[in-house]
Length: 83
Image 1: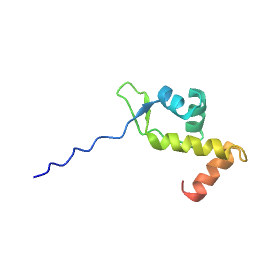
Image 2: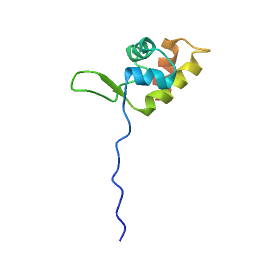
Image 3: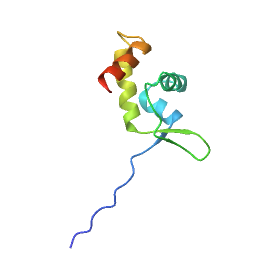
Image 4: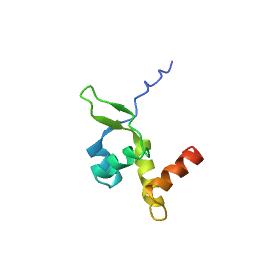
């Protein structure tokens, strides 16, 4: 009889940890949140924002797109393409 492994929750990162993983500053993440480009996964009981791995990938995508587009244009692309 084999036992099923319990599923573990994906890791969540505070803004400083996310900034380090993504190679950007905390203020960049705050700006991206303000523009609606990334969303927090949840908040701690103390109100700190938490982000998952999808935020790291999204920040990398935004950094690539910033070579050609403004943040406002990137937001429009995300809305149009439902990203």
